[in-house]
Length: 377
Image (cartoon, rainbow, N blue to C red; front, side):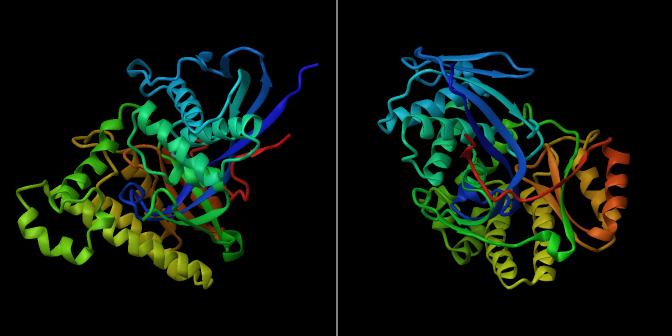
């Protein structure tokens, strides 16, 4: 009789730190109670086979783990990339079959891709590596797969939050060994619900929009002979703005201003939560959202006029919250979701109002999950 192994990895929510991770900055993130799961059996072949409801079968040969241009932006590339990263680290892997299901909807802004990558990493780590690799290392492997195989120049936040679990403050100054600190805070005890609102827009076709952010920030860093903004003091950056103008785009400069300010905000938010100062935390969340809209400019794709679903979602949050709670763009931006902290007494009205404009079921009330990627049995 075949032995079945069950694995689970959570989606994540970005509490704060919008597009700071790829600049080796600071973030607040949390695993949430939506998950990607796999029922796994060893198949005694040299192939990894993945079945996911509604998607084509994935099959990769363990003797063929080179990145393929034809697989860019596909789930197959993530399986191949995660597997390759483990083999590069000395893992000996045999074939398995996984039946995957997920409540982390693709394009929801809750990082279904990171949850899937962490799930694959957890399977390989537990079945073939005796759990040798840490949650941080699994996150780094997942990021490698997304960068080198999938083709998306993402930072490490999504994978780290899914892999580690709970709510975490992460400082990526040393990306090889990031500082990770768990923060214990219950939003429900503060009388607020954590909501993720689906704008109805899809991430598909937006890789260039996402990639433009680190690329533009990289242009600024290169003017200082550096790779990321974290290597350049905020004082030196602001002093150089007159010289930077005309050499880089004004949008790049504005995006850099966001990153510097956002890093300071994340540190202040973590401090506020440690001190149980929820009102200060909410004020900082609102500041973060305004900065993303004004400076980072990741609400609507460039040139998009007729459809601006993220902007509509944010405007509805502003209208329904009436100066209470807080709201901000969530994750990569341009499409996907908005995050809101909603006072419990406004929650029913808030959900009804968002659903009326964006569609039934667009507003999700979430809880933080303590566990990251795990083997269930």
